[in-house]
Image 1 (cartoon, protein in one colour):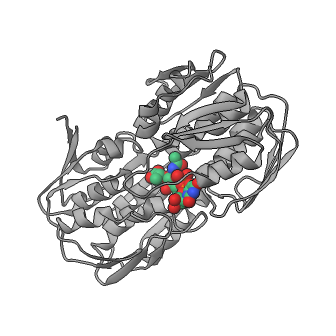
Image 2 (spheres, protein in one colour):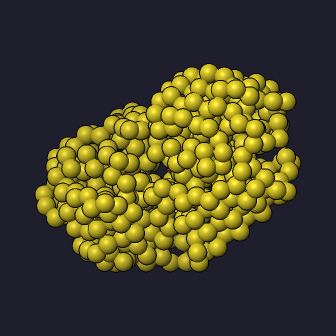
Image 3 (tube, protein in one colour):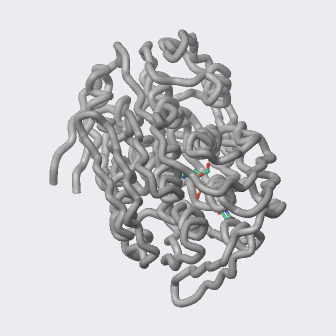
Length: 419
Ligand code: EPZ
């Protein structure tokens, strides 16, 4: 179990290259099941979650070659079987549930372990199942498993009670080869949905409106293989923007899409950070006094919940009172307890965190409770007096490629200790 050790107080400088998006590549790997042809993903992020979903597909006899040197993934589902995927792996990473829609579309039936909840919330899948049923699948849940079967999926109009990212993706994948047209209303609008639709359309699907609240999928007979490079990871980019802000530094970030970062750019600008876009790069200059701000997480294009922990860390260092409201997940303030060990002043009141900026944070041993909380604690360690040890780093490795190497490249005094 690795830990990351940071000696705080160093300014950052130079530039960092952002990897492609975890939350894009996971559904794209699931979507490759829809065709028996080979699919190739270029410039893939070498993340723990990518390795886990690849292992899930291997348990159903998919051939996946991951080349660490070229960051290329070759997926061959020609021998895939509708046998059961490993429950342990599905419970290990709930995004594995994203293969359900593709498997029902390809084989007409599939049985999969119910994905676990996680530290940030119960993570239900009722909207996924509502979508599969609306497409004509017979869905049953029992003994910790979901089972779905349908001779043929039939297009339908589906309204999502909540614009769930995963449910939108799973239904979109299932509907690609359904008979007739499917309309998803109140669909999630995240950029990763658009990227998945682009991948599916390159496979021969007919999807219109991805990235808006209404997505139309006109069923086609079959899909073919394709090659795809995922979009850059807007949450990793936001994390490094926040690293510049918390250390009051000026850095350059390469591999950004301004349109995907609008809410993060808006809130950091409101706090006083200067942000200059140069094509697919940005200059973030925070070498100044910053102001407290209020943030409310919302479905895209609102402020992303995946940036909430990082911003909480930043606002602990900004004089004045900031209020952060988390509307997406019911338990996403676990980083607050750990930050208080470093001297932060955070009071949790239901779905809101009231943060009073403090003059300094002090280094401590803290624990990553989830992926983004771990990243946020590393950011706090960058400015804490003395040494900070962040344990349970496996959470962070799920969503960040070599985070300590990238921060070290920007001048941070940071290292990973293998335990
Ligand atoms: C995706 O999770 C992301 N994961 C999450 O990123 C992200 O935080 C989340 O979307 C919201 O943006 C991946 O893309 C792999 P949801 P997902 O379904 O699809 C409720 C990270 O840090 N809901 O949009 O699971 C649910 O309880 C991770 O990279 C239902 O009620 O998110 C939650 O309150 C964390 N019923 C809300 O919707 C359902 O059937 C958002 O969930 C599904 C969801």
